[in-house]
Length: 358
Image (cartoon, rainbow, N blue to C red):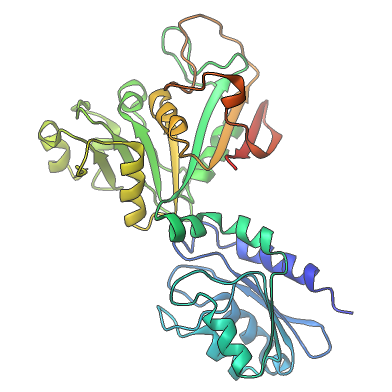
């Protein structure tokens, strides 16, 4: 008996290899079994605009795919986009059975691929490991349904919950291993977002070092437009994109002259407005790195989807030492945001805590 679930989990692992390379497309993996149930081909969507997972898997299988089974983490597409429809490749290969983890909600597909395959006489099943497939492609699904990117909130803090000492010194709270993990995360997102205070206090560069799969736009939110005349973001704006959301663009003429894009919204700047605009740009993943005011606004708006927190085994104390998250905050403990599917693991001497808003 063929263990379809085992093969689907392998396809999901293959799909995850495309993280950072394929967005705003979904991550997709595929496995081809021959008529006897033996794995004869596999593949994943490797880069945006490139061939889809099914095409790679079917090409590897060749004639062995005829009469066999295609196991795929997302419904095969049935429309012409940057590549031909995968349903055509499936039918041409002589596949007898297709097992998909989930239907593709993309409007030009939306179940149409499965309908087309059934109409052509292919046996079709859908829903194997669907929860895992949805979790894998949660950012893609959110962008489709809500028009907003998946928001990663990140911060590092001491054991007593401090972002810096009472004098503002924060280099370095976290270890080299933790900072390397953050650079990996930076290398697969579409944008890294900070508030004005972080630019003033830290003069960050906000790039992935070493470079990752993507080059993230550096995004600054400054309603007042009171940003420094000299800083690393402005100095490198022609090398790596810088977007500044502001209600006072006249104060940032120099930034624009140096290559930064200034964005004013139709209403005063809010977290919601910024995320809507980033979603309109088809940004799939956005990393919010601070500071406390920006993270507080994000939490108050319940706009963060995933959390990455690095806790260092250090205690600095001090009533005036800042904490990572400001904002209005919860009035009662029962109103606090309780992370779902929270995990923790060592990261050098630190502890890396990851969780989700729901």
